[in-house]
Length: 298
Image (cartoon, rainbow, N blue to C red; front, side, top):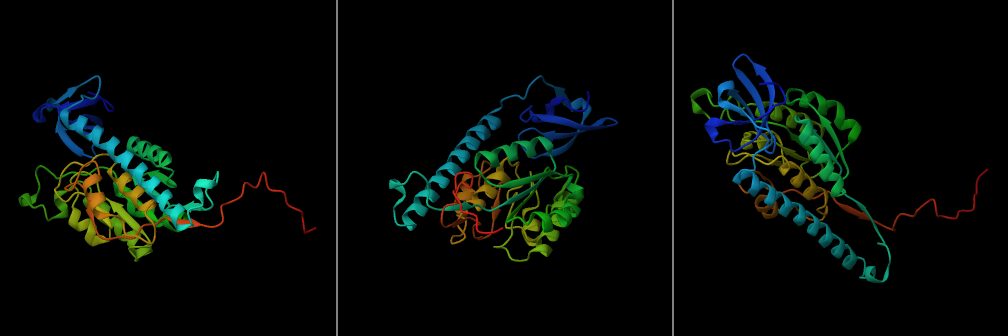
């Protein structure tokens, strides 16, 4: 068994694929390939596999991920139609829109490099302006302290890997000590909320698999995982951030949309009423390479 190997757990029926992150004596630290789960496992419980098994859970997640992406694209189309109507319905007669868009800017911190790459690719597909950084969960608070004043985002995503500890104190789900990384997420949220205390000015999306939902909200997150302490899909935080980025500042983000249309569903992600970050501007920006200008200054 080597770091980087693709494995499944015998004791869980091989339902989820993991990458070996670290080896410690007779234990391996493993990270989910599709779900934001971090776990320890005895080496004798792991089976090396040549490719990620397509379990029923994975199949359902992939289907839901495609559905969520299509919904986001439809939401974009609906925003375009609404803007056309608000601007007098002149759009059908024009070759280009008469306005320009200013969607909310995302700062995405991720404890998993592969998930970060997937997330940035999805932001690009959806034309969401985003800056991403691969940061270990323990260093996220310090990273935000440095990054927030420079990036000045509208939306912050704080995610990576988490999980409920198998041998937790008194089986207590209320204690942050019962979670792999929830305390690190709480510390990062607190730094972000100290930077900007208004919930509608800075939208915070935080958490990973089985994270302490209540503690993350109490620390200042707008949206967090995981109300039902379930596994969340790698791209769930991206879905919420994109929804915030392209919801108008005139509207609140559709909570039922977020709850029902994230890949993990109502027990995976929750949150509080929050305004969107999307704005339009007038007039449409010119292509300066085609603009004919008479100089007026020496």
